[in-house]
Length: 124
Image 1 (cartoon, rainbow, N blue to C red):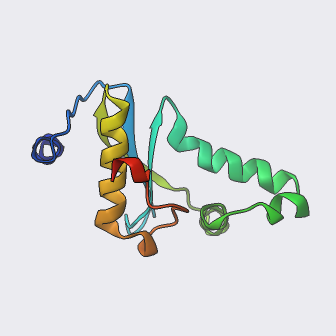
Image 2 (cartoon, one colour):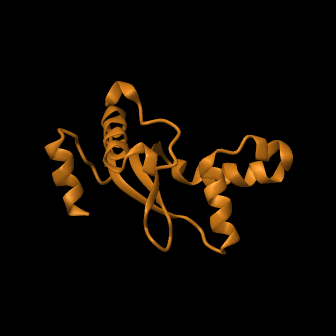
Image 3 (cartoon, helix red, strand yellow):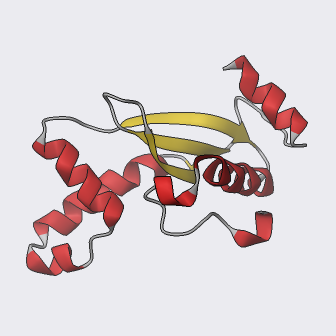
């Protein structure tokens, strides 16, 4: 995605395709609608689904701890689908990753996402 670098430069961010920190989207596999925006390193974006599986194994106790994103994963799995993931921004600067995450959440609008918070306020 060449345009990511252009957008990043516009906002004063330093996009680096090999960067350690990344901003990711979790999307519906059929519609590609973004349902979650996050910031991470290594395999962070896949940990949400892993957490949901762990909660499912705990039965009622796990169900009581489920968030909207967990319930979304279960709905997908019931339909025989799995989430689509996309890394949309990489950087070596964690602060840039926080800023990009917050701006992405602002772009989509928190009410349209399953994020619990509107990004990290310090970076908004």
